[in-house]
Length: 423
Image 1: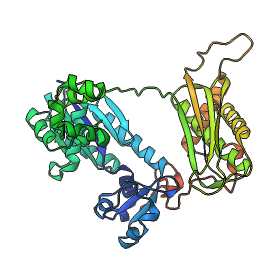
Image 2: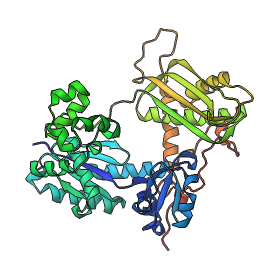
Image 3: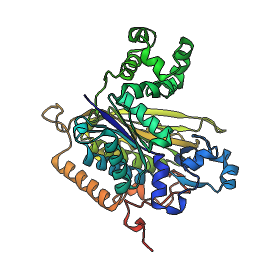
Image 4: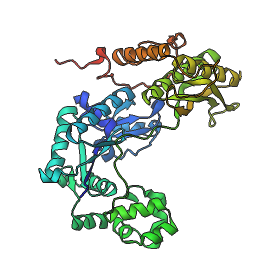
């Protein structure tokens, strides 16, 4: 019998902040979105005092002051590195791992039961992740991916489980399904639940007992598969290799409005540079690039937004080619007299390197020298930290377009100068 486990880090962003700063442990802590806007992660203490997900900081300042809440800006470099460590730890414990998001992954545990109980193995995974990374996680085990997700939900909801739930037993499945609102089932959500409840489907158990053909005719094949999975019939499998992305977008809302073309070009150069790094990570090249900019539609004053695309002379992942194309597009779109608050770059039409057909006079892709140069650039930036080697336009001392991150924690794991010091 196939068995899956879902390992999910608890309040991932908040937990990472608390790992490296012990003074934050046990205190309400929130992590903010880009430009320190809204709450995107909360510690259990912050949830307890009533801070809601998505709450804008300016609306909860009194609550923050009253309860001495720790406020952190999003530290994506730190979170990304800790996510990599989390996934590497899981790969040491299971031969088949499917990362599902930055803080959760499915494991294939088929055959584990012959060596030890699934509950004991779940605790072993939980303890190993805590020992090697410091991250608190919950583990849910069952016979389908959807039931494993449900088991993980139970592990989080009910502290007496110790953070691990084995839901391979039919009797236990039905007990947990009976007390789980249908909106909590993976893939359903509140919008679908509003349509299901008037039809008598209020819990996960109701959905599992509904006629699959009727579900498909009234909703979709996706909801039908969910119903089958709740019955223990696997309709999804772990995919160790994530599907290749169809596009890459790098964009940002600015810390303050941009009114000068040079500053806009510096911002877009940074976006194109990051997009180039990402597509090289996918081992692909792009055949098309798009750039866009816009003013704040909620602010007073004139409004303007526009975008433009270009087919590249040849498919490329070379930062120089992509930066040149992106800055040309933005220059064409630029209009004086506007206060721009957002811009971005999108790469499309992905292909395998050196596989494009051309004619005898044109280049068909990046040369070996180009690829070697980009590899060297990526290696330097990986060892020295992102941004060690920059394009000249990125080296402005004043960057009005940079994100506002007034509560940013150090890059504890990716910058030598920020390594924690023992005292």
